[in-house]
Length: 440
Image 1 (cartoon, rainbow, N blue to C red):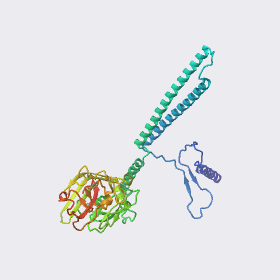
Image 2 (image 1 turned 90 degrees about the vertical axis):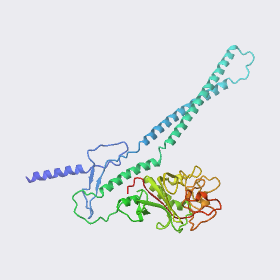
Image 3 (image 1 turned 60 degrees about the vertical axis):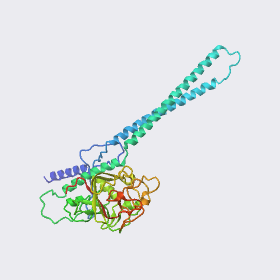
């Protein structure tokens, strides 16, 4: 009986060893595939682990990533270009053969005059050769026309490929953005759930997901003005912003603030790109950050204005978007309402919508005789040049000369000014954005 148990034990060990030691196929040549019923597991069956955990090796099946459907069009277009290339090569070869044949015939019949006594048969033969040469020339002309047509088709296909912008990082970027948004939504839904009946525990000290903008903090119960850290795009670093939570319904992310002239706004392109100033007093948040905020959600803009006479007005726009640096931070703004007047769409000569950003060191405006940013000492979406400029110089009292101060072209009394008039300064200016879908 003891012998039978011994034999059964040895057989089980032999089977276990054979099944668990599966050779590694990761170095097989390309094209050699082998299907297995389960993922092979390789166990270390001999030697000592020296106090550490014994390693396990698991070979998982390859992963498959699904790309956007536009990538299929690239392959189709490239095949069409390759077919046209083969046609062009055939036409070129035919042209070369025709030319060689024509040259041979011309060498054999290159006599300008027939010698005396030449019989009629020679004359007929010469006429036949002349006709063949003409036919060959005609064939060459037709082939040249076909070659030109094929070249035009290639140019047309190249134009179509450029217009379709198939190899466009924006398409890939949007695809990845959607996937990340889905994952973030799933993480937020699961963060407060438990997989079982969990006992009461202390609040977690783990890492907390940052909010996308001030409206998210407001929805989470934050009701005080101040500096908050946000991350509108998970692929970029988080950054601090000033949140307006106590007025106009709350949830506003402030992108610009003027109140005492403590910050100079006559800055370079890179300074306006990255942002400058003090978030608690005067600042420009930065064009890159404004782009990320307006890209992540459909945003509305609210502008608060106050002059030194104590008059307060506002302008609200339902659509506000700033493009990336490649597009020179182009402004898209529409849907005005408010009491300050729509200075950003003043008239067809002074319209700041769809205009590029200009600074004293980078001229992107429509003024043909100079740089509006240098002339008015600020960075702004100038036209040729302005009906509004909230980044102008801060004046503490009325001033004369160039209108390079904070300016809003539809403000009270501005239309009555002349070149010798005193200019109206502003005491406070605030630009802030909030998602259009925000519910107070």
